[in-house]
Amino acid sequence: MHRLYECWCGGENYDGARPCNFDWVKHLREECEKYNVTFCFIETGTVFIKDSKTYLMPKKQLQSKMAYKSKMNLNEKPIEWKLCDNFGDKIPKNKLYVPLSEN
Image (cartoon, rainbow, N blue to C red; front, side):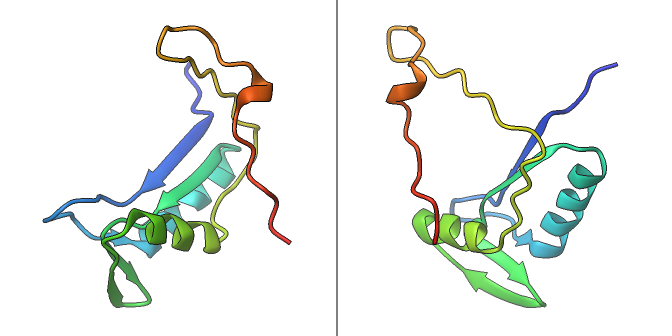
């Protein structure tokens, strides 16, 4: 049996993108919580529906900010990054970006 450890969720970003409905995001998060799976809501997408209102957000920076402000992320299990540089060498942890904590 295989197990899912993390789920990344985000809306589409291009002309003609399908809407991302916040109710769907919440349902997916609930499923992840039920099965102890890390959930990351990374961006709303260009067309975002929340509380029956449609929002158009063409800028990815705003989409990411709104997704983060929703507080939907669920860190049941720490995410282990295995990142490599352009030569295929593993990047040490002390060289990875660490975001500032929000006060």
